[in-house]
Amino acid sequence: MTASPSNRPRAVVAANAVPLDGGQGVNLFQILAGLAPSAALEVFAAGPRTGGTTHVVPRSRVASMISRVPVLRRARGRVAMTEDVHFDSWVARRLPPAEWFHALTGQCLKSLEAARALGMPTVLDVITAHVDEFVQEGLKECAVFRAPFAIHPRMRARMHEEYARADRIRVMSSYARRTFLARGVAPDRVIVVNPPMTVEQRPETRRPRKFCVGFVGTLEPWKGAHYLVDAFKRAAATDWTLRLVGGTGSRGVARYFREILRLDPRIVVAPADVRRAGVERAYGAFSVLVHPSVCDGFGQCVLEAMGCGVPVIVTDTTGASDLVRHGRTGYIVPPRDREAIAECLQRLAADPGLCEQMGREARAATLSDPADRFLHQYSTLLDSRVALGGDGEAG
Image 1 (spheres, rainbow, N blue to C red):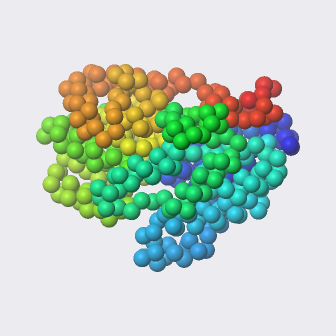
Image 2 (cartoon, rainbow, N blue to C red):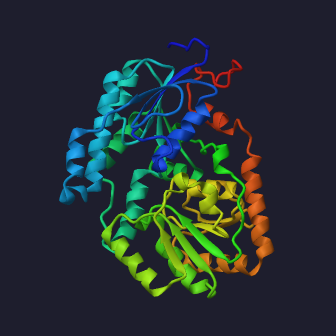
Image 3 (cartoon, one colour):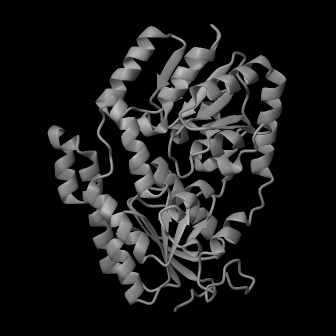
């Protein structure tokens, strides 16, 4: 394999995303930021980044045509799959040799084969739980709202093939890893690499004077925002507010939230992009962040809230629960447990000092995380021939 002129190992990273745009874009940005100090990166993406070599993959003409037709545009799973298959084919035809290949699941079936032909070790980046777990839990919640599920069956089959072909599978949390092991994937192939935190994710924020419960994320059924709404209505005093930052996708969910907003003025939906608006502005409005997802590989908003000094309440099916010290930086509750969420909210609202202390400890936990944690975890993914960190030791 070929090393870069600086003697740093060369890596190719591929993701059909724009850095910092949406969940996949945040993950791509973090991977690049985490690897950049120790590897020379060549990137294939849907949009450019600052610094380094980036190949911007043009959008699929077929997907562009479909997205312009209102009736067809509703089939989001098919549109996404068309885009990802096109991206994969484009990268596979142009893949250069390097020390290893890192690519996002659902977007790299042909690319993995091209990398293997070039003798490159491969890392499959999975930002969710195992797709079967995600589909199983997601379908349960979508049935409540009669909402379509976003993953096309053919995409699910592609992901299964990628799981089998990749040398190593990077997951973002111990929860996500458990979903792979439960489905028979060999333990030594599935490695947890928590997302690295950037300085931008931990600004100083001011706490609101009145108790405000926050949620950040898409208002889709599997994110569990309806469980939070129920918990809030059970627990809330008249001067509490619930602020849900995110947009709705399916019609059934949109109808649900229109009715909720009509009946309870304490609940507000703000369809904003947190990172464009500024994380300090978004999280500074919260007394506590609740992430009630029924199946989430990580949950970037939890990391961001903690970095801003906001205590969190998360389900144990949220990967970011890896970072939460129960009773110290927040609370970990079972999924779909409205009562448990309501009890935690009442405890924090009744004791502002506890809420402030938890927020301080949450922020301290993110600040004290060693800078090399990401590389230490990531190095276990790689073949012993690849050295990270510039100290000559094999990863």
